[in-house]
Length: 87
Image 1 (cartoon, helix red, strand yellow):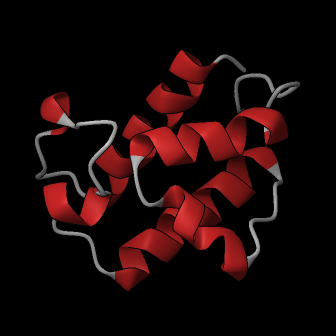
Image 2 (image 1 turned 135 degrees about the vertical axis):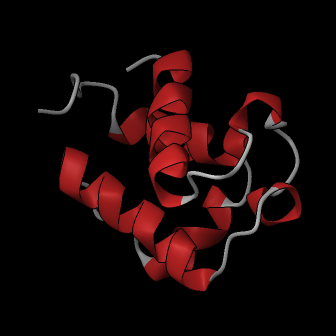
């Protein structure tokens, strides 16, 4: 997957987790929690959704990489380089 595709996947997941949030103004370099009302359970939902969609494991010690959109895309790019659109 290309970075812009990964970004869209993350936006789609965030839209399901936080349907009342305006995601059109998400800044790529600002932590999600500073832009949205996400708690730790919401964050785990993101990780679980990625696991369900793409069968990837994200170790807890790597969660800090998913703090911002840029960090998330950069972390997931090598993991999803051969991934297609989820079923």
